[in-house]
Amino acid sequence: DFQTAFEAAIDVALALETRVDAVLICGDLFDNHAPPPPLVDFFQTQLTRLREEDIPVVLISGFHDAAVYPDAVYHSQTFPGLHPLIRPEDKQPITFEFQGTQVHFYGVAWHQLSNSEPVVLVREDRPGLHIALLHGEVGEGPREPDEVPMRFSLETLKKSGMDYVALGFRHDYQVVSESEPAIVYPGTLESVTFAETEPRAFLVVEFDMENDEAELTVTRIPYKSRPVLHKTVDVSTLKVDDHAELAARLSVDADPSALMHLELVGTSNFIVHTDRLRDLLAPHFFLLELLDRTSFSDSAIVRLIKPERTIRGMFTRQLTDELEKAGSPEQRHTLEYALKAGLQRFLEGELL
Image 1 (cartoon, rainbow, N blue to C red):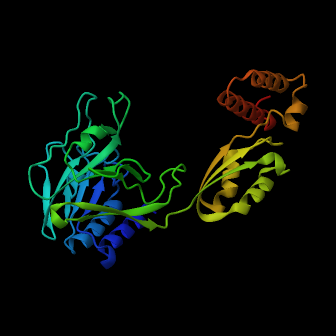
Image 2: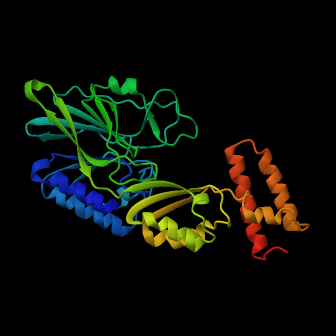
Image 3: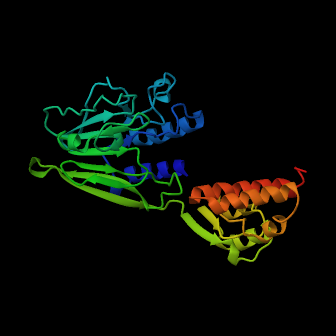
C-alpha cells in the first residue's frame, strides 16, 4: 500500500496540472535504516522518474531510517537525483534555482542529541526562498530522557527567518503555524495505526514571488487510501453460543479492502478465543485488529462452576471475589482475562 501511494505521489509530482519543482522527504522514508534490497530498488526506480524530468529530491533521515547507523542505507547505496541532508555537519543550505528564484534548503535529520542541545536553524543572508526540513515534535520545554523524537521550539522556528518549514514524524496532517513561517506536517498517505482515520492527501506548497514577497499557498490533493473502520459490538445482544456463530454475525460488516478495528463488549456465554475468532474473520477484512473486552464473570458457565467443590470452583470464586473489589476498568479487564484464561485451561482438561 505504501509503495503504491509513493508511486502515486511521484505521478502527482510529474503531472502537467500539478508539476512541481522539487520533492521534499522529511524523514522515515523507510521503516528501518537497512531496508530490504527490493524496496531500495523500488525507491531508486521512482527517483529515476524524477531525475529524468530534472526534479530534485531533498531528503532528511528520520528516527526509523536514521543515518547515525554505520550500515544505514544512505551510506551503502546511491540514489539518482537525491540530495540528502542526513548529518549535522552536512554543508547547508543546498541551493537550486527554480523559475528564476534561488531556493535554499536546510535540513535537520534525526540524530542522538542530548536534552541540553538546542536545534538552531541559521538562515544565510542570501536572496530567495529559505525552506527547512525537520523531523520531530514542535513544542516548548526540554525533551524528556525517554522522548525519542527531536523537539523544536515553535518560538525559535518563528524567529528562524524561514519562508516554510516542512515537518516529518507525525502521521496525521497538521498545520502548526499558518504563516511567518508556515509550519506543516503533511501526514502519511496511508494510515499507520488504527487511530489515524483522517482523510489522506498529497501536500503541494506553492510560492508566488511577485514583488519579491513570497505568497504561500498550501494545497491538499486527496488520496484514496485504504478505509479504516472502527466498530464496537455488544455480544450480549447477539445470542450466540460459539465462535462460528459469532463470526457469522460479525462478518456482516465484511470489507476485504478495509482495516477493521473490532471491539467486543458485553457478556459472552462462552470463552472468546481471540486467535480462533480472528482466523474465522480474517478473510473478510484486509487487516483485522480484534479487541476482546467482553465480560465472562456474569456468564451462565461461571454461575454453574462457581458453587463446585472443586479446584476450578475455588479458582472461579477467588477471581469473581477479586472482580467485585476491582477499583479500575484496567483491573477489571486483567481479572476478566485471567478468569477466561484459567477456565479455558480447566474446560479443555489441561489442568486437573
